[in-house]
Structures are given as structure tokens and as C-alpha cells.
Image (cartoon, rainbow, N blue to C red):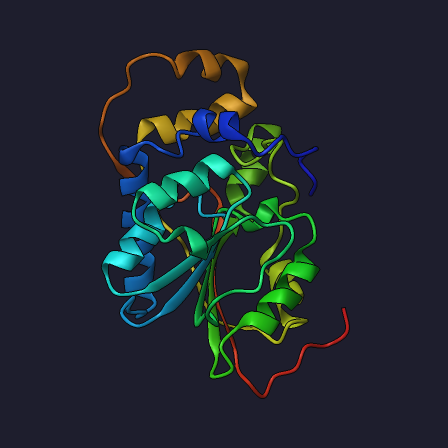
Length: 245
């Protein structure tokens, strides 16, 4: 399901989505920590590449725990912010053109970013060529086109926003990654740490009234919720070969 033309990925894009707010970053890191723990993935000694890392908060969290981190991010302001958090700038890349990475990832991360990708087939082929020959995993969290919340809310679903290029079913994601030799090993329900400003950001992109409400003072409480996302862990081994697209 195509949501509409993507907006410009610029500094205003990052500002409107609060990518650089520490409270938002804390929630994103908490969510990632929970998913890694559930999947029995230890950050130590992993070589991680995050696609669409936003403000870079999860890269910082991973680096602090022993990961060698890299990332792709189209917004220059986000790359600058990640560098300010201590991520070496030479490991931060734009998404176009796809770069030659300094190290081969053992773990790829998509945290609400795969739905922004215009050519997922080309991206997965690149990932297959850049991955560690000893095997690489992909942790992917993305809106689920078959989620009950989408069926219930219809066009008011919080993921129906202009910067989501397409929404996939689990089978759709598995098919795309399967062409690059990645196979699903785990499926899970990704529960996220959310603060009010994060919910209102999404609501404000769907409803004009919510955009006005977002300017009011919001409480600081946190909730653990799922808003219609799927969670997948995929794995690729050296003996798997990319099939024809």
C-alpha cells in the first residue's frame, strides 16, 4: 500500500519528528534493548549497520556497549547529530549512492525505516554483498499492512503518513529479503517505549487537529505499546546465493 510521495529529507524533516530530542532517543534505545534481549542478541562484538538511524541514539547506545557501528541516513542534520553523539563521521553515510562500508556487518537494523525505501530490491542486494561472509542477521521492525489496527482505523491509521513509501505484509518483506539470501528465523511482536510527543508527531501527520495539539505541554509518562508494527529476525549464511530479482 503506497501512502503517497515522500517529503524532502532535510533538517525540517528531522525537527518536525523530534529526532534530536533526548527523551525520544532514550525511548528508542530502550525499545532496541528490549528487542535484542528478547532475541538473545548481545551487542558486544557485533558489527552493526543501521539503515535510517534518525538522530543516532541507538548507534550511540550500541557503541557504548561494544558494537562497531555504522549507519545510512539521508538527513544531513541527523548524520551531524550522530557524529556529535560520538559516532565517527567516517562511518556515517548518506543513502544515495549506496556506499562501500569499512567493515562487513554482522547485524543490520531497520527500526521503522524499511517503509521509507524506494528500491528495496537494490538495497537488499547491496546488503547481501556487504554482509559478513560468516553470516549476518537483520532485525527489522516496520508497519504491518495486515495489522488489526490498520483494519480498525482505516485511513486514520498512524502509519498512513506521506513519508512511508509503502507498507508491507510479513510475507512481502520475507519475499524481498529472500531474494538476497536472507531467511526469517524469528517473528515477534515489537512493543515500543513511547512518550506522548512521539504519538502526537505521528497523529499530527494524519490529522490537522492533532498537529495543533502537539504544541501544548505534554506529560512525561512512558508506555510500552505496539501500534501495528511487525518484528522479524532474518539470517543470511555464506552458502546462500542471491536469486534473480
